[in-house]
Length: 456
Picture: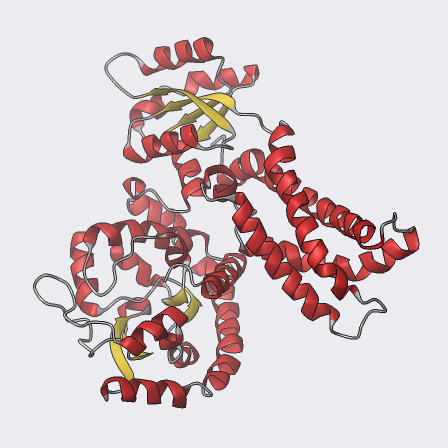
């Protein structure tokens, strides 16, 4: 095949991410120079500048990680993000300056930059915002080129719609060509000449589309690039198109033997994280238990059945945040009759209700990262209604996961086949791409959600 996801990322997304990264570092340095000038009223000498640059260089590396956690280097954020860049940058840089203030209280360097941190926050925010919002878009890196979309399934049209309205997409959708009665090859060739298209984003999983393309690869000699629409969909949206799922897809992408070493290292990482966290969390237990008892007198810690790896059912521990424990056995309407208590609301917002799950992590019922475990009654329902739902039980469920980060419509305390089907597409993305690197990404972004209380 003439395309793959690695080539796709390297040619379409990664160059702009690399340029953003290098530009951020340069403007971090420039902001330090400007800050020293504003602080003293004169241009800093090389000696003064280097004296400050050496410790700040360590911080720059940390700050880039903060930008990463904030999502400022994500392909989907660069291309499709709608949120305000300025607010994201301000939060990230404020957090960075707090890190710097703590860092410089350590007696490691012969400078006292605490007086310039406030100035640096203001200057660096303005310069980074200027770089990302004004300079970067004007560099002409991968200017939007005319592209044809060839295909008719829902995911292909969703991708075309997203690219058409994305402010920084690498391609401008010139025309969508759906399979139909007239010869597809002739229509694509006519559209290529009409729009002088440089990209063809095609649904090669469609037999009619793929059969029309062998001869069209001759256009590569004219500079036309070919991309698989569903591979691009997967990279942009971070989920697997459910329409492509079949036995062959799972045979190619769900091999467990390739992850034996990864699973062992991941288990070691789980224990390393869970053991100190579980011991430290014991400090909170008396206060949380007392608050729950004073609220309604019921049990403080409850266990609920959950389906884990291989379909094994285990007891899932939590501080009780609802008026009782129905153990996931809902009524005919598929919804819980319980309600969240006053103390429970605080526990959920702070995520303190999930502290006992650290013991599940130590026991091996859970991993730090994986699909969120579901109750047995809902698993039985979803396995009947959603094809391949049981595949998510190939690995251990997790305290956090890809779906928890990016799926905004997951059901709470009730059944929802539609939302769960969409959630499965995110779980399958994780199953396909799981690695220690992706796990680290998820852990860092989970920390961000906890600190910002987003996604509650």
